[in-house]
Amino acid sequence: MAQITLANLAHSYLPNPSGEADFALKEMNHVWTDGEAYALLGSSGCGKTTLLNIISGLLRPSQGRVFFGDTDVTDMTTADRNIAQVFQFPVVYDTMTVRENLAFPLKNRGAPKDYVQQRVAEICRMIDMEDQLDRKARGLTADAKQKISLGRGMVREDVNAILFDEPLTVIDPHMKWELRTQLKELHQRFGHTMIYVTHDQTEALTFADKVVVMSEGRVVQIGTPEELFETPEHTFVGYFIGSPGMNVLDATVEGGSARVGAHEVPLAGRYDGLTGHVQIGIRPEFAHLSESEGLPVTIKRVEDVGRHKIVRADHEGTEINIIAAEGAEIGADQRRVVFDPDRVNVYADAWRVPPTSMGRAA
Ligand SMILES: Nc1ncnc2c1ncn2[C@@H]1O[C@H](COP(=O)(O)OP(=O)(O)OP(=O)(O)O)[C@@H](O)[C@H]1O
Image (tube, rainbow, N blue to C red; front, side):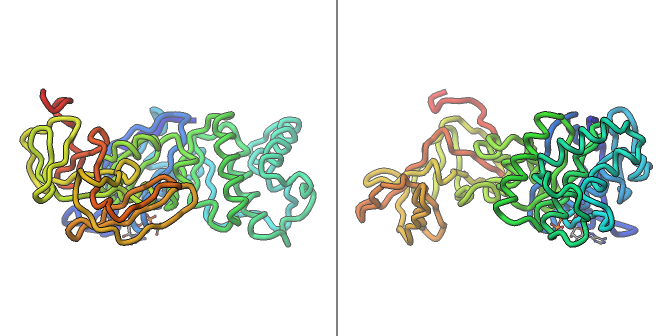
């Protein structure tokens, strides 16, 4: 297992890039902790696979270095990096049995027979294929073959890292949930450094200790699921994480309050000297309907989604979503929305600005 360092890393697929726009991966500097599970999350084309391929050695970066621990692996082949990989589609040997497939990475490295047996049994329990151990892989469903691929990825304990590239795409929805939970358990037991690419926020948030949110070739935040929810560092993180995502409103901010059009929105902290495009962000969970206070809104629609209601409202052309309790009555006289002051984040040019001090009177 290894700590992974990305030093001044950037990548352009063009031979002579002339500016930042030519880079599929913009310059980044990160140290990813040994033994943690990271999810690379972002929409299609944001650079997740490019970054994963640089870490695995399938792609050489046009700039910067990659270290596993203290070893510079930038010029090493994938095989020399001592990693395990699980791809979107199954990679199994059809003529081998399930057992032989799972044992293959261990036998290949000359592991003792007893150890191979014990480890294969353990992995087989995890992927729930104990009753199919002696079946040939040929003829198994795509689902079952992908479970073998996952098992093979997990079978070696001595790898530097395990890399997963959207590994649950072909797995049926019920099994997806189960495998995700098992992967997390295995991570907790064995402590491998894991990197998991996905565009599915539920997958990322349930699997990872740290989620690496990417947008347009940039890492916009690395944080625990709680951090991404409570303090999105970029408005993209606010929109992308959450269902529905964070409300974002243009504002002017001075001292302890924001103005949205002609209306005042109280803030918990003070902000001084903001420049650029200033906005406030508030999650729908921390917005409440009111009869008398807050921003005037028109309610467009109320969606009952089981555990709660989503109120879709409009404030002067900007959509504001509000999460209300399951049993809440949404009355015709509730024409205003109030935000919890200590849950309002302030942004300048899309990046979060921390308050200069807390408390409005400071
Ligand atoms: N081999 C390539 N040659 C040229 N451009 C590429 C190549 N591979 C990817 N790109 C471009 O680099 C950018 C990042 O792509 P990448 O595949 O890394 O994104 P992604 O987040 O993994 O997307 P997806 O989820 O769709 O796989 C995109 O604009 C893509 O078109």
